[in-house]
Length: 207
Image (tube, rainbow, N blue to C red):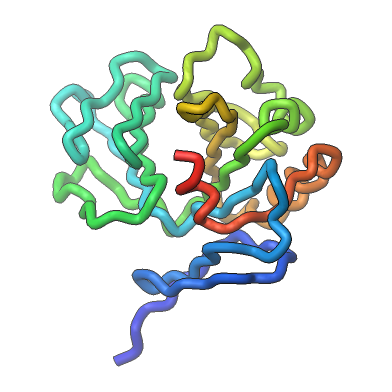
């Protein structure tokens, strides 16, 4: 019996340096010539769940409470929980782990029909201003926090990040059918900032 092979909708025109097969996914850990950043990282292979229920307070995915306020994000280790609206939240994994999606019918695995990218490092927020009216630079935004709206001309969920050393970045998720156009748009916008494709390890370094 053949094993299932899964493919990310994201393709970078870059030389792969280190590749790993994991859970049926072919994952690039490093690319040649990644440079000093900022980086564009494909996270489409990492688990992402949607949670919908009229009482979200009853759920604690992987032990993490659902944020109470719309637009609030909560990070515990490598798990991120985002409050989208009154009845919906998303759960994103920022690193591989052994967590299995809860069995309750309120949860849906959305990894197969979405793409997920991270822009990490100095210049990330300035780059975002070229491709979206979402104001990631607004000092009123706490980090992490969720913004929803058009990014690179497609509907996205965008989570603003800052790590413990003050480095900036963001992760965004969108329908997988737009992946090629979004990658081209973001890389073009990031040329003057030195944006380059980078492997999964850059996300691990950031968190």
